[in-house]
Length: 136
Image (cartoon, rainbow, N blue to C red):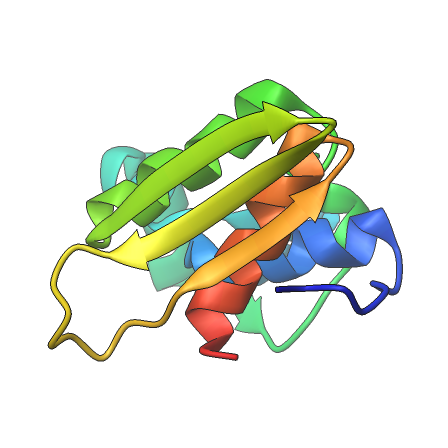
């Protein structure tokens, strides 16, 4: 169960965007920002900018551009949907604190369990998803 402190909520949001959601940092005229694979696939202008070199992929960027996965429930539910799409089953319950667990659908998979407790449901979702993806 996750008990170690995190750096900041925004650093966690950036880590979730990268490691769980599969988003990448891109540099464009307006600075560094995140783009999801779905946006790139569905947006011909984004694909053109990448092809023309207007958007270039970079290693890291400004975590302030990440969605607020750890503090906004709508963003956190995107994490739940992504994890379910990756073959995880989610369990969420509230008994004084939120308990969230992501477990692989099949026991013979290379996926790992992620579970945690937190007063905030969005934060609990993010911490459990991070644990499952990291395989700790």
